[in-house]
Image 1: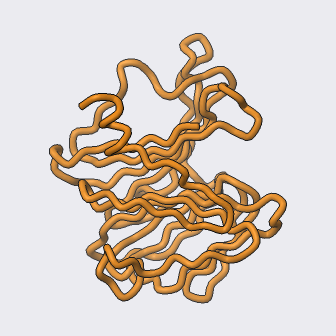
Image 2: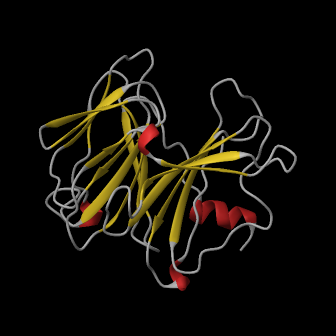
Length: 225
C-alpha cells in the first residue's frame, strides 16, 4: 500500500473538537477509538447503529484517559473525578456514560478505546500515580520516556483491553528502532504534541491493545499533529 492508501485506511483525523464526541470504528478488529472535548456541555456516549446494541457497552468494555483539563465521568450514577492523565476503566454492562469538564476555559480532553467483551469486569478509576510506571530509553538515543500502564492484569482487570500512556522526555521521539512488533494483538495509537509545541516531537502517546486476535487482523492507527 502507498502512504496515501495507508493514511486513508488507518489514520483517523480530527478526533478532538469542542463539544463533540468523535468515534472511529475499525472493522479489522472491532476496536472503537475516539476523542471527546466537553467544553460547554456534557457529552454522552450512547448506542451506535454500527454496534447493533441497546447501549454502547452492552457487549463491550472501554478505557478512557483524560489528557486535558480537570473533568468528570459519570458512569451509572457514580461520579469519577478525572484529573490530567487519569484513566477510567468501564466494564461490560455499564449503561450511562457522561463526560464533563470542570472549567470550559480549560476543558477536559478524553481519549477512549473500546473493545468487544465476553464478560463483565468492575469499573476502576486509575489515577496517574496508581499506574505501573516504567522508565525506558535515554537522551543519547533520543528515546527517553516513561510508560504508564493503566489497564492490564495486576492493576486493573479487563476482558481484552490493555491500555496505557507514554510520556516522552524533551527532545525524544517515539520508541526505538527497529520498531517493536506484537504478533497476536491489534493496536491503536493516538499521538499529539502539547499546545504551542510547533514541530516538536509528540509528548503524549496513548496506546491500546485488543488481545488476543489473529495476526492477520493487526492494524495500527496513528493520530499526529
